Length: 327
Image (tube, rainbow, N blue to C red; front, side, top):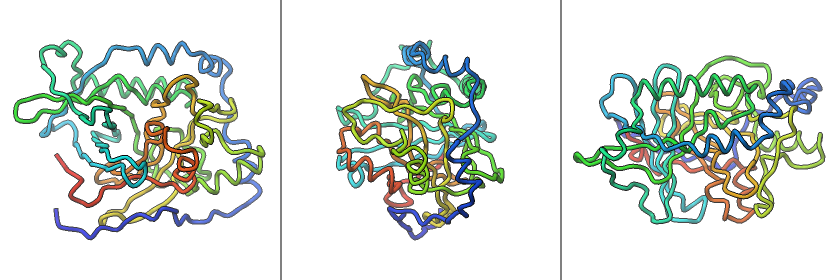
């Protein structure tokens, strides 16, 4: 790959200003179509959350020369954003119009990978056809829930395994997320459900969104966790559901890149909210997701810092093009 001059992202996005029509404001106040009552009741129950979180771990071994999919990885240092010297690795597995993101998050031991005896986990190894089926079933169930239940497409029970010098290593902390890539012009930004990356969707920044939300409800949205000690926030169901907003177009390392941010709640009251997955990210069509933020993983960060990260759409990016690797 030719050497490309690095262009750093600004902390505060230069977002295209949307025309403030009364129709658009009313649409955001109402948010999105109401859900079927049965789906709302299902999501209020913790049974589904427990069922998913308690499943036995599965293992996926990615192949560097697979003809079925392409893999691009990125290394991100957390020092600047979270004030902790640790590393996050993003592995993009791309096939057809799907992207599976394996996010390897920092372990307390500072060893993000542990050597594993492949024979001991062989019964729980998932091959690519099985993973592909899991992605299809995940989106099917997610869509059946009316786009409310992101747990079907954000999982903590699939652990990535890599092979180095005939030895196998398993990720200590791995969050797996399914994305569907589409290109469709839309009238309103909030027509995009979570998990659908659409670079042609209208632009909306977190600042614009929070301003509209506060005007409507006289408070910040549940996407803002001001007091981490309270444990959780909730969506205004059935008017609100998890969404994925496109906030900025930019250039990074010579590539056209697109910034996205997730609108969702902090649902877990007595534990970590790792199921939120990646909060904000940079998507490059040729590569995948090459930058992002994981506020739930670093919730010990001060509330003021968490709010600043969110409202200014701050995230981690590679230090250079050399931190991005194609397989």
